[in-house]
Image (cartoon, rainbow, N blue to C red; front, top):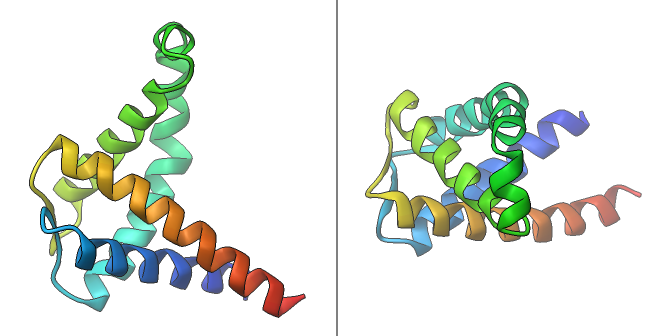
Length: 115
């Protein structure tokens, strides 16, 4: 049950973020659900590999390069998921920031209500 709630939180955060940002487009609810699933898979498999390969750059930038990795994951999801498009790198970076903040706020709200 917690996995479904987490998935729905990411879906809501993605839809809200795409509504706020004109450079990010999600065609519908099913595309947002598929985006949440693909992001979960990419963050589980691809992101740790990218983080490991870029440890020196991440150390030199004091961790700010992780934002670039997040944007690259969003751009990769834009290639994989039909109905989800991102107009460029900067929109992907901004989308990842807005979606992360929105998901964190929603997670705090629903985590407190479940306790």
